[in-house]
Length: 368
Ligand code: GN1
Ligand code: MG
Image 1 (cartoon, rainbow, N blue to C red):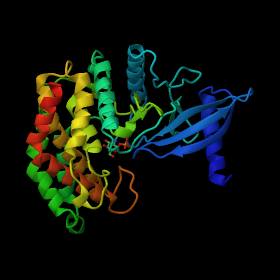
Image 2: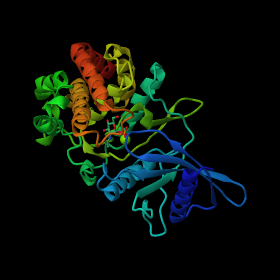
Image 3: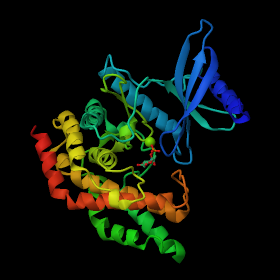
Image 4: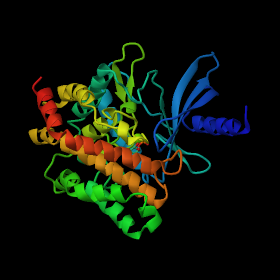
């Protein structure tokens, strides 16, 4: 065992003790998912040789400034879902001796532990069945939580999907950035300026109280749905860190931004990037089948605009981070955030080109 693994095992064992996990730590592996937190699959062996597996997560408290509030939101949402979906696997967070669903380690890092659900995830899929099932899972999330009062949740990242504010922040940093940085991204900035008015429309309206406040997930990437290994049915929606009051349409938009992209969200060759209408159709079928009785007509009519808006919003966030020197999103190489920006903008342009066709697909899916 290398030194680093030894230290990590000791740390995970100490956290396991805080959560009163029976037995001794047996093995662990790192789960590489997401741009923010650190996730570990940890197994414990008990005296009678039984092995139990758990998920340990260290929360990035630079991004998540109020982790206790996050855990309060998660408790509310998981208990609500569990009551409504009897017989299905659900996320269960372990509690410490004093009844908390989190703990701190000796370096003041924030940890939580949940049950491990044996499953598969898909980073991207070409299979219409998997795409429709992903839509179904996120639609069901809206449906199951439609009776939970969104205002009971903490807004753990204020203005998370306030597109207008995200753009203003980018433009503020643009004004302060040195020329050599700006030279790299003038075209990208120009496009974001040009479409800013359209991209901010929905979130401005939401802020004025003119659109319904829903319980939203805010990170509806397809790899946040766990699927049964054999049947490939969706089991449960995970990664509830950003559950907050918000717009249902943005959750939809974020999901299709990711799943209907012909490429990964950081494809460097933008000529390969397009918005795949058949993937969009498959997602709509699964999603709208669940939510058409719940969302208002205005919400349904805004789904395509929301898709465009959140894609621009994310491009603006990536670009802002690039300008600031990569302080927020984990990067794999210098310029990664600029590559991500360009990919999102190529996608947004294609969404704009296909706007009418996408609107028709939504209408057809509602009437199915
Ligand atoms: C971040 O870490 P991950 O992949 O769950 C980000 C999302 C972005 C996403 C883009 C709290 O999510 O908003 O859409 O990266 N989460 C946060 O890959 O900022
Ligand atoms: Mg996430």
